[in-house]
Image (tube, rainbow, N blue to C red):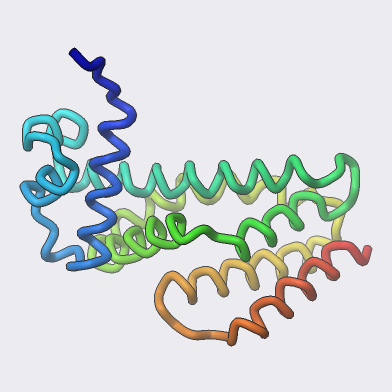
Length: 183
């Protein structure tokens, strides 16, 4: 007999939802199909996510946790006490998104497009993360400009807009990193 792993089941359900959301869109998302794709019973899905809204919140939670883990890993690579430490970690996190993270964010964008009330839930996660950016040792305007540039690029990528070429993407990352060093 195998031991049940609720976290693994939740993640499998969310991955199935992400796959279906990105393939078929939010309006076509049917919980029965999510359960089938995740290889769980519909009752099992409803145990973890009793409503579509709960599933969508779980998706936002997963996306945030993935992003936060990458940001924390990048932050650990930055030496303590140097001005711009948090900003450089944010830049690297924004420019080095994994395909899995992009899929999660794209699914979130699809949900937020049709369920704008979920935007408040997204903001509850996103806003506290930005607090360290305000006290990073960089001039506040510069730190904010860098964060907004990063956000614009990854939001553009997630929404499918081709804002810049691959070459320009690397050049922008390098320039933002230079700006985060030059105090």
